[in-house]
Image (cartoon, one colour):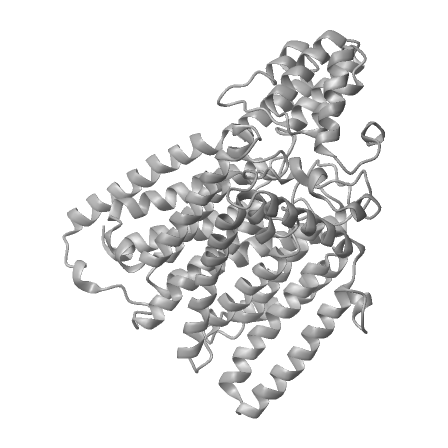
Length: 565
């Protein structure tokens, strides 16, 4: 396959696939319409991309990207090593907790995504990636506008009362729209930008800004404002005298400091920036830090922070946010890494993101003219990092953090070698027959790897679909079948808890006790499962005593674990 054709296929897979992963929502067939479908999409897309790379050989990529490959390898090694120190179930380590799906496989697929994106060799490919981001953002803008105007047509339980987008949470959609408005604003400066694109901005930008505001997501406002400010920085640097850049930088620095102070309820921006949940995040961050410090070499396992929050929280957390408020994520991605895998995972994650940052800095130092691609990559990459330190690694958002990091690394190489839009021509002399044969080979490789990705990523989706069918049928054998562990039906704590409660309320105490005992054997680190066993009317005195002992072990600062909700 010629380099041009391989490049086009790979960039198309990444652009469409990343956008689709952000957009996909499955309603009705599963209990979690957002996370399990996005994990499935991520697995397929990353595997398709790797299939194209394998068809062309890894030699050039490995030669040109030794440092990056080493960093990615160390990250995966550190994440695998966390398994050996984890007391959480193997299935939770692989697939993550219910409603998050931030297990090892998610990060494995994200590594594949970053590696694939960093192998791109054309600025046109990077533009295609940005267009994928714009498409996913446009879909969410239209969908959110529809919801605000006519109501939601997706049949999910919106407990927030705000727009959710295709990410299932107002904070997530607010942050993503902040990244989108940044990218759209930056692409307006492309000289070849179509007229319709510029005219559409008269509606798209104000509507997006309104949706960010109406989502009540502070991170969306911060990300959007910071992103646009970075775009403006690059433009002023290229078009105006240095004194203008100094003045703008000074103004931006003051605004940034005031915004930071506003998050702590200090200064004039407090009413625009501060949100009560910001204060609560401090306790979540502290608990994550305590978890990593207690397990510095291998952490507690991927997506296992939820099992450790109670035992790692500070005594003040019993008052604010409260004894009954618990979380399964640190609301800070780097600190999640620290809790999941200790110092090795934390440092290798920072190293990978640092490689992306250094690539952007190197490109910016070389480029004095205004480069819209560089400006958009820098602003959107920074926007993702900004939201990642106050939020959760939701797959629909996380995929862009890793794609944009790969794109930054790729673009630095493209601009350094002055091959912005031209792939080397030496292989274009191949016959049409050979080109067709190699194209077919690449397609077959992509299909095979895509199928493998499907089979690896589908178990959580399959299990959730089976569980949903059991709920709808209200059939006891199906309900029990949804708790029978198998490859395509991995267990999770939420499913156990919900089903056990249904059995108990249906006057089936023997069955509820049976599955409660199975549940705590499967995950002995879950406070909620032990609490459920303790509350069952059919549990023996010995079982209640054992449950109480474990509840006190898992929530040591709580003066009365039996009173928690």
